[in-house]
Image (cartoon, rainbow, N blue to C red; front, side, top):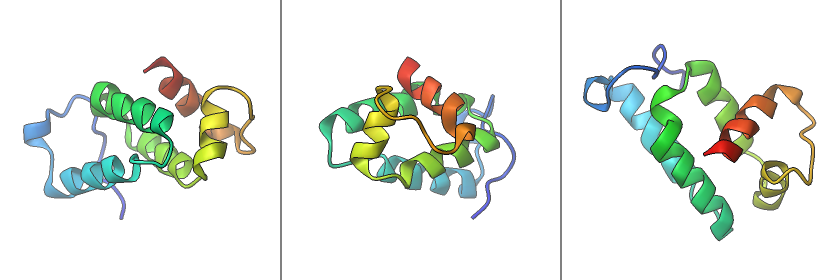
Amino acid sequence: MSLSPTYAGVPAGMRTEAQRIEENRLRWHCRRGLLELDLVLTRFMDQRFNALRTADVELLKELLDYPDQDLWDMIIGRLQPADKRVAPMLEMLRAA
């Protein structure tokens, strides 16, 4: 499912139904087997999701496809992502 244009600057109450469904799916996908990942991803979604552009959301979805341990290792800098396009999203996750 592709998203409507950007989330940036769109108050939660003014989002389209497709955007609300997509956000809920992403929040569910952020629930992981590692507590550390749960904490980082939940905080990120709570603090930064509303400012993401559609391209950022797509990068986040790519990162969420990684296995828990690989994703955690990338977030803490122990593992470098094979796809350098996700590096800015990893920085956003670290900063959250």
